Length: 185
Length: 241
Image 1 (cartoon, each protein chain N blue to C red):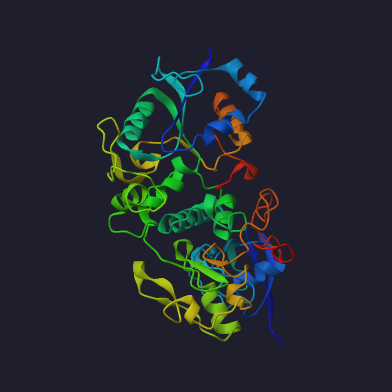
Image 2: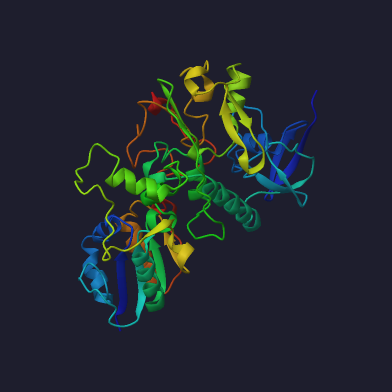
């Protein structure tokens, strides 16, 4: 039976999903042995059934991210944090400390919507529509929110790294990245 | 005449002269002991503890502990590599180490140590995400203390080689940091030619020379293909020119 894979991008840039496409023609080999469930690659928005592998890109910066991540944990046997944002927060995590502020979230929003001379915002308000997910006080890594089985670092991890990871898992082996595939940038 | 003797590192016989540290004897014999705060040409200070080895069963820092005749030293055993992994992880969690945006990525010794030790998995440690200043006041040099690991290499280089005391530790415990001899870097007598500013001195991307970021393309950086070890230094002198 084909293994099922689900993927999602939380507070990420979809770069890690692009890296998954970088496995090039091996994608055809992959599709021989796996089927994609919920994923932006096939535009399925909900899990159709339990999955063997969940690939999660990006950290958690809002409550919807946390909700989605918990749903992935509930529905995936092996959950993999893919990329630097999922592993340690990545670029979004800069708002936690590098803003040099007592209240970094407020300062981040004020800089983005109110106080910059580079913006056009006639309402002079920070967006607060009910439909928008609530931002968290800071950006969290996946492992801070749920149990993560593997972390694959990289910004993004190379196609080879993702191919190696999936090949190992599909063969029922633990993932131990060789030196050349282990990158934090 | 100084007395010569031998001892064992991971079962391999190594020669040493009376007064040699374990690290000096190992380097001379071509045995790599992982390290961060110790570097060629500076007095060892034994603060990062990455070079921890077991000498006759006791944990000691190889860069400061004298070698003992006929002793048995454990270096790359699973137990010690485990300690090192935890130490390097703690350094990662203590500062703000954003490899994707760092000029030193690919030539960073902290990153290279993470690669060498195969660090990927989540840890029990929290990310402290401290608020630390960036000092870009100097025309040629930037100090991004988010990336500082308090190895003290710039302190020792400035004091012992440049004779300037530009850098020094200030504060204690978790508040300890590296300060400069003035309100800002621009008010000190630091110069681009100082050994403290040399690319090989700062093991991370804390001391940055302006206009010299990302000089080696990805795939040709120091640690892209070879793990950090003897002879694989952070900066290739020709490349940095």
